[in-house]
Image (cartoon, rainbow, N blue to C red; front, side, top):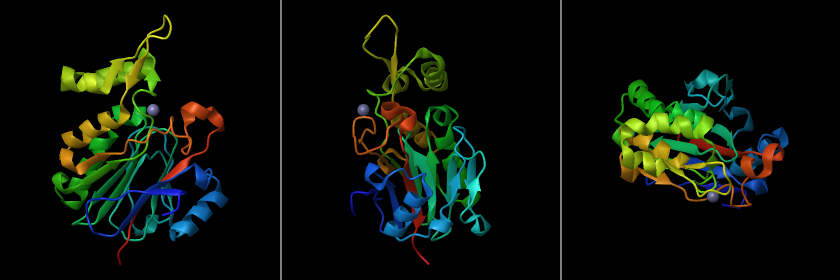
Length: 248
Ligand SMILES: [Zn+2]
């Protein structure tokens, strides 16, 4: 596909459209850009279903009547309906794509730090299992482009503290792989946090097997072809992550 969109492929032949727009697509939050993206991806702009994205762990099951809706206070979307594009908007936060190929279920999460420490990833997997009566071990997950650990340096409070509290019961090894003290550039101490790895552990805790979790290595901060909130501050645009089941 063209360079306005980075497609994501699952290890399954069930047709699903998944991917994320790049900086070349423009700011996907602008209605005219969103329309243009929908046209180029051959999806219905009016059907694009989103959440308000409040950096919490609200997850919605999208039913037929919800097509095109923007769910209030929602950072995760799940559906088993074909031809309903689920979308989230990101610039550094990892988008997490979930897919159950046998039962044909798609999910999409906006996993910024606050959603991560409130367990959005494991909650989404548990929800898919309970609502649709499927096994988590059959779910495939892709963690899309995001700010990498080296670039995501944070102060102790609130971010590093929250991750330490969230993951300390997982043992020293897991904790150290998620958060580490970064090399000092000044008197002040900073920490590096691996958002993708943190979510990967949560997906595994909910039953997804490691071989079914793919972490895309592209860093949004380092790669100028992505929008990065941290790099470009408030003037930055947003990429649109999309997943749509394509069968009828
Ligand atoms: Zn980076």
